[in-house]
Length: 301
Image (cartoon, rainbow, N blue to C red; front, side, top):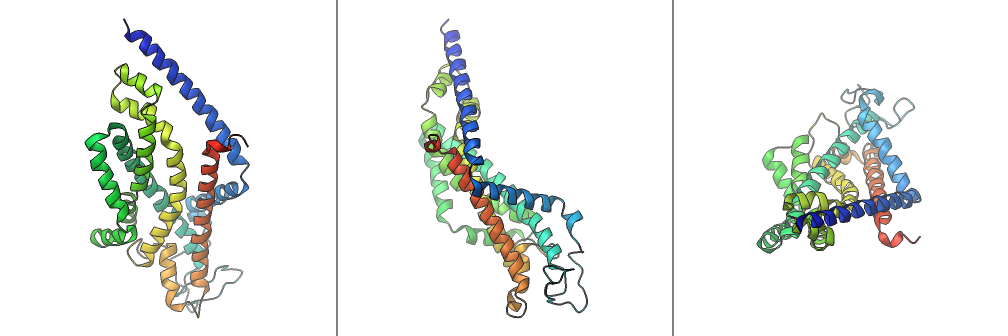
């Protein structure tokens, strides 16, 4: 007989939590719209995504075709970024390179977030030996130099686009797990979680319905900031020859193509370098804007 009132209490608490959550997201969006730097980042990222998706339609020339006698050719009206070290149109290669950068950045981040949320939620919710084991794994992974680990894994598995996405995704989740663990340890003591436990709801359902949604704010911030870092990692691997392989264009690979000729033909490295810089900056501005929008201390502004 006591179960029904308990379930009613849980339903009422859950409804109140969901209403408050919707109100908080509305206020966060309002604060985000007032952040010009974050809006610039969002618009630039949307533009890059558009270019990457429709690269086949936007490229003016075949990115793999070498024009005879145009090795290191300077920018012209017909070829605004000039030619690379073997006479390929640089603008076309930079456009296609945006597709690689975003594919790796987005998919590797999704993999990292999924693993990090699962591990962090399990560690924070169950505690005890589960928390001890998972926390030691997180600490060990965060203590190891990430780029060195990526180089080793890429060399062992063989460089390719799929390998790059996979190795970054399965090695960059530790920081997400640490943040989620800390927040879950706080959320699991709240009334709506305790009420769900008392009514006999399974732990898995409690975690995914009541706990995880309430810790996603910091995860979203970390993810938006982390995409830029992953783009840098992908560029570094491609620069070292351990990422995306020729003839597939990539920003890091184009930098590697022009490094030996940087004094003679500086434009070969300048344009892909600028694209990496501006794209990473845009994701950082977006991440900062999301962080400020989700910060409860901004609610009084």
